[in-house]
Image 1 (tube, rainbow, N blue to C red):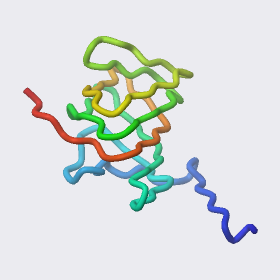
Image 2: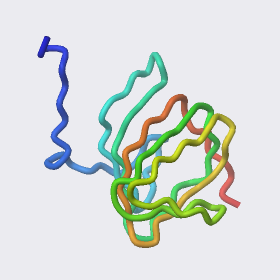
Image 3: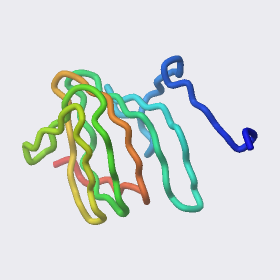
Amino acid sequence: MTSLRKVTETASADWRPYDRYGEPIAGMWWIPLTEDTELSRATYLLKFDAGAKSRPHEHTGIEEFYMMEGALVDNDGTVFRTGDFVRFDPGSEHSSESPDGCVLLATLLGRNRPLDES
C-alpha cells in the first residue's frame, strides 16, 4: 500500500540546527527521518561543520551510524571515515569532532545521557 510509504527527499530538505536534546550544538545540523517515541528509536542525517564537536554523552541504548562523507574523530583518537559503519552499545561514553566536516546516517535506540564537559 503506497499510503503507508514515506519518502524524504533529503537532497532538497533543509538542515536544521541539531537540537535533539534542547540547546542546539554549534556547527551540528540534522534532518530527522523517522522517530518512534514509543520504541524510543530515531533515524536521522547528521552533519558536522569543520571543527564542530558533539557533547560528551552516554548511550542508554544502541547507536549505529554510517559515515557518508568526511571523517569523525572520537575522543579516544579513533577516526571514522567515509564508508565506516560504527556501533556503540548501551553504557558506552564518548564525544566526537570533525576537523574537516562530515555527514553520517544515524540510528539511535534509547536516548543519550549528557555528561559533564570537563
